[in-house]
Image 1 (tube, rainbow, N blue to C red):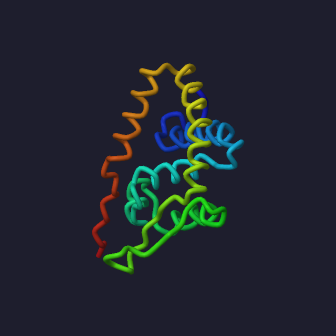
Image 2 (cartoon, rainbow, N blue to C red):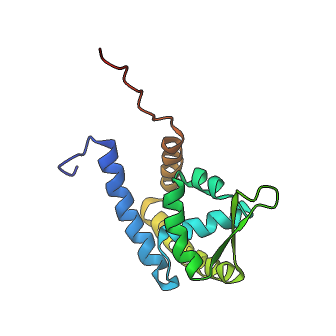
Image 3 (cartoon, helix red, strand yellow):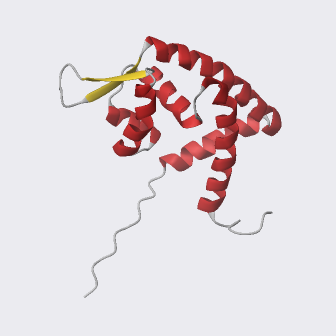
Length: 150
């Protein structure tokens, strides 16, 4: 067991996330993408022109962080935003043809990284880890608001 915050769920999760994030960032580097950008491109792809709000909710991000992450993908011509046909105030997102090609390239690299991780950890253990982390992400972890003191 590592010294430090070993009993702290947050510190342990962040440490693992940094390690795994670095691993996937390195794997996706030949495509010129970070893991977060790959995840966003994939979410847009499977979402069939999702709204910004839908993406933010699925990825548990606030809209400003989503906008920040989208900017380089828009700049590089992989993603475009457009107004919803029924409510012009709602912004939708889609992959451009160039973005589809980039996603296809990145999926090949991601698949290699995914297999390498599962070879190290074991496919069953990796599936259990994803299930456990999904369950954590789905928890209602809102802190109760303190009653005003008199």
